[in-house]
Image (cartoon, rainbow, N blue to C red; front, side, top):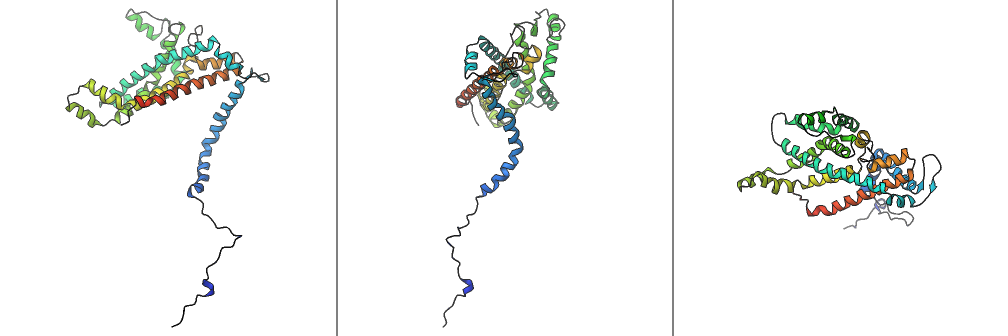
Length: 315
């Protein structure tokens, strides 16, 4: 019996101390380059046109600048001046007034349309598209149309009110009715957006729940209160958050319909930022006011996010 001999060519190689072992790269790191490559088309504009201007506005807010002369460092003076300026409190008050009138109107109207268009009837798709059409219409066009509808004297709305012997307000020319005019136009334009969000929430509610409630003898109002509203709360929460954020930034319709007047009765925060920058040449104060507005929106949104657990029901 002969012993097996290992050929020299089959000898196991030994690692040299100078040649480190090759460690395979993780799969995630290999894909990181491709992720960055595909994100660049959106990341570059985000950095250039959003993050850089935000950082720049912080720097401007710490200076006195009229857009022409060199900037003069003032530190937090712009913020202190705005916090003690009655005009700041006034424009924030007008903005809150707008939100308080706009939010219930657009939500109740959108919910009513969503409940109606959630039922089956002939031409339902046409009405859904028709009510959503104002959402994609330019704000300038909508504001001009409503300015014509609410025109004092011969406006269509006042003509209809006069037919029934009702008072005919001055609407956007009257300090008392200027903000309600903007609220009506804004709610009409955004009804379709709220309708679509709430309609999607309604269609996500299982029909078995309604059938079981009917078997138990629950009426239409009981089903709406005990099933529809609780299970629609996630969509309601989304609508409220988005509407509040957009409400604090209202500008286009105010600028076109009233210009902040008459006598500043409809001036809002963003309108004040615009006027401070381009009308009065106080870009530093305008930047500071924009950051105060950002802080208010951030605080209100944070409160909503913390409070949603108390009333938002996730099925």
